[in-house]
Length: 432
Image 1 (cartoon, rainbow, N blue to C red):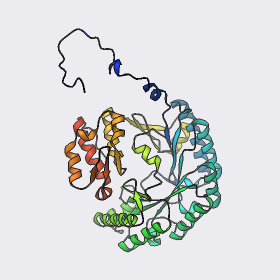
Image 2 (cartoon, one colour):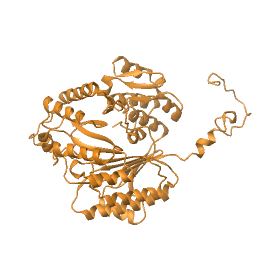
Image 3 (spheres, rainbow, N blue to C red):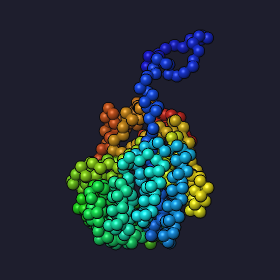
Image 4 (tube, helix red, strand yellow):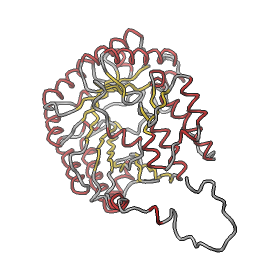
């Protein structure tokens, strides 16, 4: 601040060799320079037993166990190659997330091989460890293996507890099987695992009554965490073919889906399930998912497996989605990344705001420590507009979503990010 009003006059004096001036340099900064930055790990298992009608992810129907075996072999080779290439050996692992697809199709032996490879190539010290699961694939033996290997969180795709809704979504499990799987996790997991269940609001055939019943059942299970995703139709899904092209399936309109989400928020609040993101609600507001928080705050994430997405510093990247190419690259001792994007410093700021608002409270201090200024001060009009329209609460150290903001979390993020983007003079990239 001391030289904001300082006049710079023509002179040949004062050779500039550094910025900022040496007088600002402190010994404690060396501690940060020497620290080994933590990393998060994502592993993508693309195989499923069926293709869900709403699914737009890169998945394949599993034909044999040999396909899983080959995938695990390639993953282990890729983990070793990435560790060598990016010097991961001494970087502590904060979180691990195995997603898909259906990673709970992996056998106990397969999962042990993956964990052993991670332990050999990363610095592992009891990280948060999440496994996605499908109800039909859960049994006591697998859950015991998860427990023994340090899995701390299981996220189960349930989507609905109404059998007709489940069936119309192209899934083969039933509400009874989902409840039985949850009981197995609780009984065998020795209470060491946080359990999250995923629901989808706005599935085909959903009514206020069926949705209310699903929410009641979800709450009655007593799981630690309930995530509600908004049903959206993408071009590569069966629902798009059935509802948009053939008109044989009718999805609830957006206005009705909004009412579903309002109902969910009200029921969760009455049972003390509190939001830590605008779509995940946890008992007493505890049990946050640190993997998601770390990713949205911009920490590094190393991705393994076909079509996995990762972030390293200024680089976003994606692995090849072609299974043959994936195996070939890993056999050559290479990582499988095939496309990416290097963000500028300005684009990194926009990304941090856009994704950071997925949390119910955006940490302004974190942004200042990362980028050197409080972005709220450069777009005060947009911040005040969102506040006056009832989407956010503005605090000294945070922007918090209120009950209306919870319903429109991505809108708030896009509004703030777009304004910051304009202020910074960025106009080439679309926000989404």
